[in-house]
Image 1 (tube, rainbow, N blue to C red):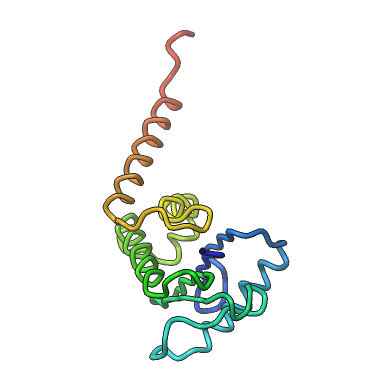
Image 2: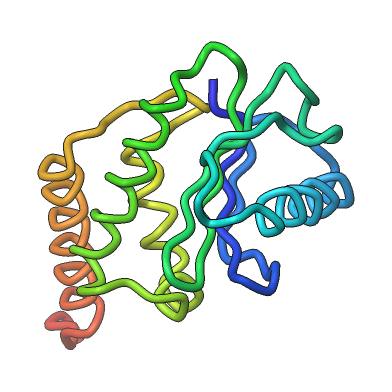
Length: 162
């Protein structure tokens, strides 16, 4: 099961955090800091999996991450998850973000956090992987965008009954 999904920049600033287990806000912040310190001090040419930090469950859990440009994408998972499967899930997530934002960058994650959470919600819910087909995810995102545009049009059009 996926325990948490974290995205932070090279300086440790969280850009997205989604926890699938309940933690206090202080504990969540400590987990983010601990995870950043564990992941950021590793060389680029080493394995992308490591044992979870003390706060996220210790050796029973794993941190699986990828570093793209200025962002770290980190999935905290229990021992039942496949490391390669999660690496593939991270790749699909990043490629989906790339398609939706046309070359995603850190600012997209900041200014479109609702859309990023929607994309993530199409892929993972309750810590379980729902969808890994990028085309299906993009189809659902496009449908949501059309719905939002039609709602915007309805609310902006003048009322006829006055």
